[in-house]
Image 1: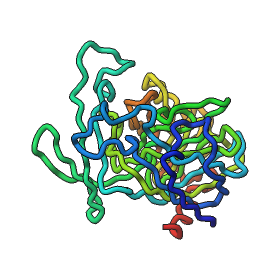
Image 2: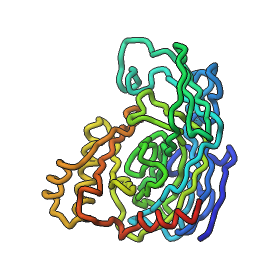
Image 3: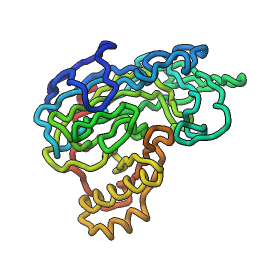
Length: 333
């Protein structure tokens, strides 16, 4: 198993999916140890730092990559298994940004009212206790929250020479902001261009479903990822697999269309896994799925359809790829 360690220089960050030359080639079967910058590009380091003063919108959500996966061709399936995610700094940052967030007027949801108060919260990391510290900005309360690391952004280059900002979630993955993209999860992405050209970033030390105010506990991240390739079988939308769930992420606006995408893709996937007619799969999905909102703030909203494996007949997806990578991961950390 080839091991790759990569920490990009600032001039190597990618800010789009597509349109960027690869930083290196990677063979399927490799383990990658990657460092990624936070979504604010290290612009918010104290409660006195205001997004409107410190953030340059051209350089938000920097990505580590893209990586050219040898042998990957359009129609193939890129497989990324998250072995480990560790905070790379002793603090994370979150903020309210003027006219941005799920409960604020925005450029797309126009209102007459003024923006909500702009503020920055700094969460100090206690690795020994696996906690981050919440400190109220408009009061005196302080308490700890468990660290639950995740990657907000994982994706490949889109098709047809398209170039998309790293802020966008779409069928190529991107800024999905799903807490399900965590340690122990396997991600299946359809390959659209030669080499797949995948990138990762937007590490979160924790985030609630929906990412209500628009920013999680954003922080630099050390990621350990196994890379594999399945020839053919490309999913139309990102699929996730954990020990307990099969999942699909749909991204669109309005939110109900994101939900519909994830439901339809899950119906087709479940039909393949269990050998069901799509109408029977539709009925089964109706009775057993969960549908958490991943994000309600980005240029597209993201909704996850989840099916618990434990209540269905024992089955495997992608010929047992997830179980194989989970076993391999035990020898990696």
